[in-house]
Length: 264
Ligand code: NAD
Image (cartoon, rainbow, N blue to C red; front, side):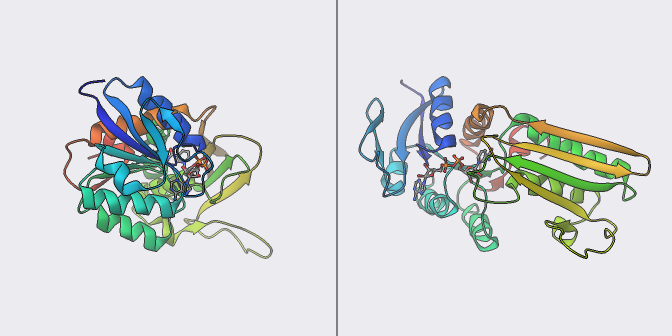
């Protein structure tokens, strides 16, 4: 396909990697240029698209591509970002579960190459972040904020990156930081709920691709905002949209709300 920009997909045979490859195929402006998997993946060497064989080395994969997309492990994603910064190739990151140190390294690398990092690439979820910030601002501290998230049993990090981002949006709406108010677990003699707390509860099981509810609990009333995913395809389409948006941008760490024009 002439003129189409080439995409390297890291975690290419994972649940999200499969959807990303399908979304790239549907986008006329993009074509799969490279597919990367773990060094012990049984599919290495197999042809995953015409002329594209599954590899395990991210450096050579990026050399032939215009943009990278990673839905993989934090370690594999950092490997992609280091190679992307060296090669000057922009990258879209959907992986979640980064440690504080890994997150700091991403911020440093994004000074050298443009990166979109989003815990959730769904357009509707990013609108939810926007609404959460607005509702927290309008309702004020008299309404207690609680978040509940549900994901499939194979998810390896908790709470979800989306739940944390939703909590951060509530805190931003109140002019505060999530880290100063988050309660991620309750057990035993907890005492009364601290004023201004933002609770996040995690449910795991089945094959659910992701549900998030944000409750503002007031005296005699409550407001609920909720998003439910029925498939993973919309995350992949969002990541592809972010990849197209990112081409030609200056180095910086962007998020999906910026891709959608919901904030500058
Ligand atoms: P998954 O386990 O199905 O896929 C991850 C893939 O990464 C696997 O195929 C694995 O073999 C591969 N991998 C492991 N080590 C690697 C390496 N060194 N190099 C290349 N590939 C390697 O998981 P998933 O459900 O696809 O989720 C992947 C990540 O994406 C998770 O962090 C998840 O939370 C996140 N996620 C984000 C969004 C979003 O919108 N941002 C949506 C869904 C999932």
